[in-house]
Structure formats: C-alpha cells, structure tokens
Image (cartoon, rainbow, N blue to C red; front, side, top):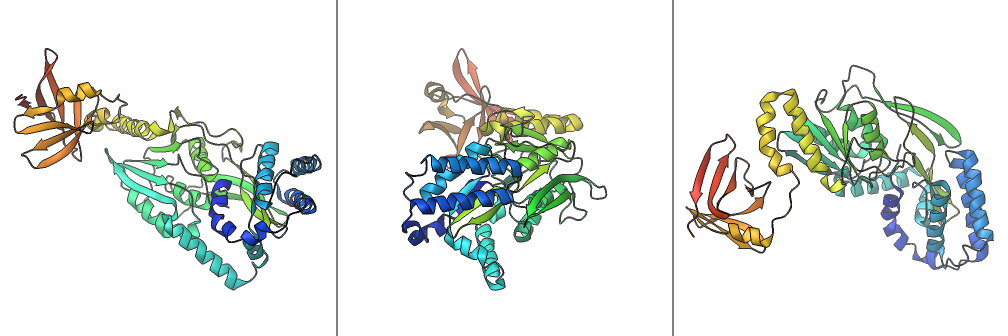
Length: 439
C-alpha cells in the first residue's frame, strides 16, 4: 500500500507534464472547468476514505465554482493547483492533490495491456534504481552505532535487494539510528520489511492494521513482523528514529508504530501528520486526483496521527537530531555495559553543541609548536606535522581540538596567564604528550 507524499508524486510527473504541453495549451472554457469539478466530485465521493465527508468537500468545490473562484485560472495546471489548495483546506489532509497528466490517464485506461504495464514497471524500476531505492546513506558512527538514511520507502518488489543489503550492513551494530527527517513516505510494505528486523521472528507481532477501498469494495488488512528475513535480527539492540516536520506518511507510521510498541526512541521534531493511504484516480481525460482511500491504525490502541503528527520522545531541532540520538545511544549502551562508559565519555566532546570560536580566539592558537605548526587559513585551523602532513583542526568543547580523520587522539590547548603555551596530545587510552609553543 503506497502512502507516499503528494508533493513527491507531483514532482515525479513533472517530465510527463512537460510532454503534455499540447493538452495544457488547448482551449479551456468555463464549461470545461465545470465538467472537471463535477467529475472530481464524483471521483472523490467514490474513493475518499470518509464518504460523508467526501460529499461535503465535493459540495464545497461546487460552491467555489459557482462563486467564480476558478474563473481566473487561465489553464488546466492553474486549475489543478487551485483545486489542490481547496481540497486540502476543506479536509486538512495533506495527501490530496490534483494534477494534469493526460499520458498517465491514458496509461491508466490501458492498464489491462500487459506490455504497457511491463514497460511502466520497468520505467519505475529504473527511476528507483537511480535513487538507490531510498537508501541514501549507510555508515557506522563512533561507538559501533549503525546509521541508515532513508529518503523514501520504495516498493520492496523493486527494492528488495537494496533493502537486504542495507539490513545486512547494519546487522552488526550495537545500536541503530534510522534517519527519516526528510523522508516523505512511500510503500508501507518496505516499512514492514525493515521494521521486522527489530523483532523476533518466532512471535506474532502486528505492525500496522488498516482498511482501504479497492474498486468500490472495502479491504481490511494487517501487516505483521515477517518470519524470514535476509539479515540477522536486531532484537534487544537500542533503536532510534530521527523525525522532522517533513517526515510524512509511511515514514511517520514507521516511527509511530515502533514508538507504540516500545521498540524505538524518537528524536527530532513533530512530524507532518499524514496518516492515510492514498491512490491516484483519473478525472476526465487530462486530470488525476490523488485521494486518501483508507485509514491505518496502530497495533496497540488502534489510533493514528492524522492532522496531528507524531511527537518525538526527545524534541529537538531536526538539524540537531542526529548528534542527540548518537549521544543517547552511547549513554544507553554505557548504561547496559559499564565497559563502554570510557568510549561514551571520549566521544561526548565531539557530539556536544559548541559555539564557534571567534577569529581572535583562533588566531591565538595559531603558531609554532615542537615538531609541528598550526596556521589560520580561511578562518580555520590547519595542523602541519613534519612539514608535509596537513589536516584541519576542529574546535570541540572547551579547549579541545579534534583532528580531521583521526579518532585515536585529540589535542588540548594549554594556557598559562591567559596565553597559549603548549599543545597537549591526549590519546584515547588517557596518555598525554605535550608540545611547547616556540613563538
């Protein structure tokens, strides 16, 4: 079930809209506009998840039409934009969208043609492959914490291999962070696949419960933890989900369900609040309507977050969410295993928020030290050792300096009487070595 953000779908159709300039520029009369609004109302009433509300919204669109609110729309695209605004205003549901795409409408009408269906599917696969099926970043953070950056949830039928590779990549982490801050949604089945890695496979655990309209009939469905996976499970390991105000739809469900099941800690900002599954339906020969067709419910108390969003456990600015989640993960791991406390303490200065030193403060550090020198270049500190090895220094908390690409030691600025007198190297095991300032 695809519950993808309407803005993404509209963006994806941009190329086809360009290719339909002939339809866009064709004469567009008041009678044409009335026909579109009437057809839109019928499509809305036949598919919207809330039938009674659909009638009210359709009536609202007709009132706008009768009041002349659409008279100023010069063409089809302008009318589609205005109708989208009015649908969202009347419903408070950000999933609604109206677009102009006669090629898509023609393809929809010809969807029984196996050759055409196969061609469209291959086109979709190529487009997803260019985006690596939503897996934008995989890496390990300090402390053996796996990090996975997801831009959207691709159809797992297309993206299964990429998902399997990602799941295998993170399986050796002591904790995992899913970054959904800028994820606009997608296929709930991909969310099901990825979430299944966080639970045991020998126990029935429901992730999502929902219903939707399919060709005029109501379909009820539940999605459960999958019993077989292409990677090791992460049961018992801490999980963190980063959220932002642009986290939408399936991304919100992934976060919301894991929070409800007590399986993840959410860090970031309140999400957008788009909980409904959607589908796209043709309207006449040129337009389409993206319409919410169902309702998803969480597995605990059958609630959702439509219009409200998902509230994180640790509300912070989305830009700071990764560093905060990293600190939380290190602290949680140290709490469970005191042997990891030293590592958490070592990494704390790198993850703490710190003000940027002034140009005067940076200039005071620049100078010659035993066997090395520090220069101020373009507002940054450049460390040179033996005249040929050059790396940038990054100010950390207090007088600490991190060295670009180096994780085993850092420097501390030594002051006496307010003046910088030495540079002290601090190794990860606590040993130190001091280099006196020479100028």
